[in-house]
Image (cartoon, rainbow, N blue to C red; front, side, top):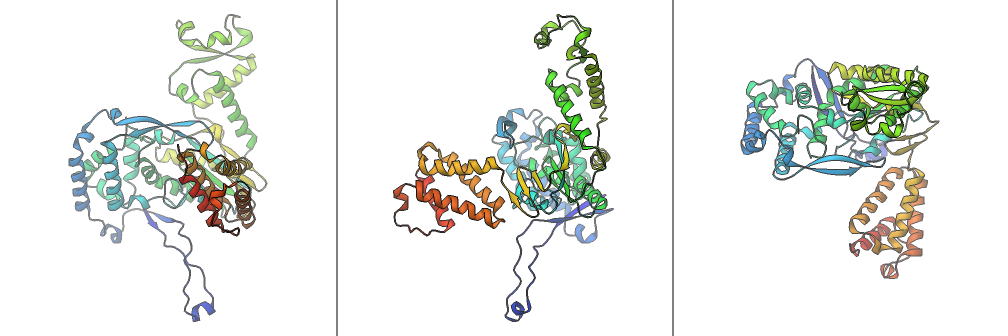
Length: 488
């Protein structure tokens, strides 16, 4: 099967007869960057005729010749440096940042893929991450009409699960990549070119190309998930933001005990706290662990000593973990065996998503401890954005207080801000306006807060030659002016 994705043209508002007779045209709506994907047995002639394979192969060969030294390197680790980026829920995420000359090669490759394959517009319409004019806010707005019942699914180690072989197999199903991969010479050259994007056989997180490639690779999987969702219920909505899949509806679409999933997830978290390695490391054979009951082992097996697994138990074939009672040990042993055998409790939708992964032989796994399903009586958090009632988004109380605190500090203690910190706050302020801008009352509240802090705390030198009745844009220009005067 071949998956062909086309962008949907920007829609227009309906106009009245008065507008028509007065010569006013229909106003275009905001471009949502939506796409439509077709699943066909072969590429129609109308598409194939517009993609001249020999010319594309020549461009790929030219690229490979220019960067042949980098492509020929077996160990590409020296071309990366470790880095960290903050997670949305706290903590840090490890990434691999490419260094020159790999940075230049990947930038050139990105331009080649976008200009030749139109790669930046190949994504399923349910994908919202790493796409121009799309964000978590737009993804949350898709669910704002159906906020009552929500299923949140998280994929474990998303980027690290995408291997070189899996990526090639997926790209061979996506037009126009399939046209090149069906050619013997084209396949050989394309494999050389795309190998530059991988590190130790997996897709590293931190390069300019990895995000775009994940969206292309996921097109067939996103298509099949959406097809199942549409067939299951007419008023269900699904989106994917990188490794987060969200499905919502106004009605209960899962005939399943929510408690069972939550209990399973909490038991896994309890078990992982007792293990010297993570569950995924244990599943991959990094440790041999045996769960023991405290009333069946010697008193010398204390929890403190068990932490020294490398020295204390070098003579044993397993690492003993004391659980408590025999009943608890039996229960968690069964749980661990189910985890190893991938026999986890699933809802109807989760089971189908896992089956879709398996049908593509995708090395993707679900993070069971982060699965959530239930009714939030009209209030749900989706990708950090609060859905309040129908078609309304809001910030949580924590973000609102942080915004007001940031405004106060910027007016009263501007010298404590570095330029980077001030720019970050200004970005957060605009993010808040984008989230709640569709709610007139909340927009007025932000305007009122900004005006109040300006009148009360803004230094006098910034108020000179300015009137009292300022627009929101003029007030925001004051913030920008304050930031220009900051010193690190």
